[in-house]
Length: 460
Image (cartoon, rainbow, N blue to C red):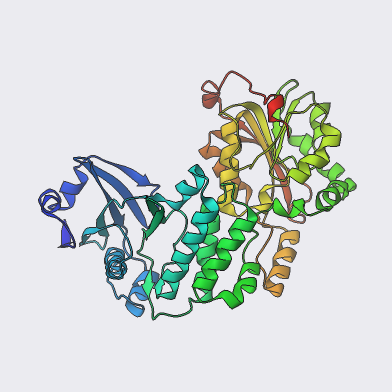
């Protein structure tokens, strides 16, 4: 099947086992990552050892041009990954050991590498108390890579591996086919921005403090030779923490008291699509200053409130009475699957980048037994066009992210929910839309039967 086959650093066992494309696919394997149109990744296991097998589709015209005009020159994605890997290993930087590469007659290519020891940085940050220290070490490592001329645009907390030996951490990198080699020196601005955006997205559901994230970014830029431009680069990036700004003195109270007329109009819209039933338990996350509480109580719901900003929870205290309340991230809710009847995410999704919006939807659907209601900003509107024009003229990163109803509907469908109804204040004029989703009938039988309400110990 293959027109080309090359062993790179294969041992005797690997040469005997991996004799052709078919022999690799005949081994026990499983998907190691969600496939996309560019590649698929399989995890192979044999005799207690593991390998990763990447199968790339036909190299795109853009990549073919890039592979011919930038170093190291390559014919396809697999060859590019091998060449970048070998260059890193020659400098003593850990990567997965390359076993073989090849390509088929129809233009597809493939690459096999051994499993690299260690764990992704993301798992270290999620499972341990070492986040601030590890992030500083990781920032220096990544910045040094960029300054050495290893331009790796896919660097993130998922592609950076770490292993611990006594009191030391060793870092390595994976997923290198988009990399390129350049002379040592200050990393390009576009590359710094892209790497920081990727790191931000890869940890957006983890409880990393804004100060810790800023220190990481500053050290990475300084080590990469861009320390003098730290402020301008960070201004061009999306906000690292949408909740942090409400911790500033007076900001949460200002938010609570603003636009009462707008709030009334929006609650009227919410009532048109509301699917809740009396006595059902509803999670308001994030709850902000508690503006939805009167609306929910008027419909005889039992309410649970959560918000990442402690200042917002303090503002909601006057209204909530004995409502169970907890400080929590909406992308990582501290509740069991199907813990509540419904979840409402109001005036929240538009603060998140699309990748985080999808995570928030999935988390709400995991927690809700019967329904989810969400508001979002639609891109086909005069309001959104004006806002984007202002951002472009000011050369600043957007702080509001719009998404179409069809895309939101796909996210909910992946979690087993169906669109019930939707409404807009002024379709294609203003950008606020509200939609309600209910769990598909085939999913209802599998939903949890018990309702879980946080007890007094969960109150903040």
